[in-house]
Image (cartoon, rainbow, N blue to C red; front, side, top):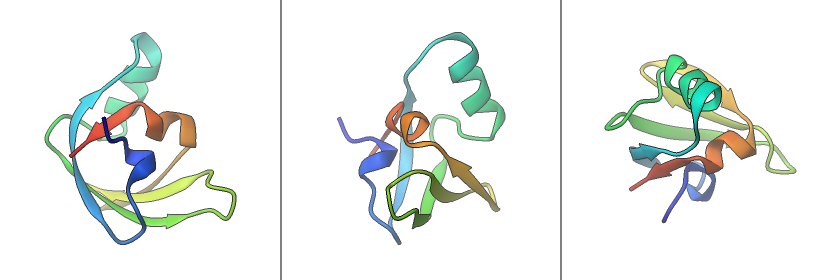
Length: 73
């Protein structure tokens, strides 16, 4: 299983599934990250947290723990 955390800078990936339950999953989906959407990884902080992505035309920063719960292909 490949997660958003594993995607390198400058690569794009398509969301396959969002793992997690309840409020965590709902918060990720409220940010526009849903199944089938294309995500582009713009930057990763020096220590790996947070990850800056482009999704649906806007920039978004995600914590590493949240990025691990997003399965991509």
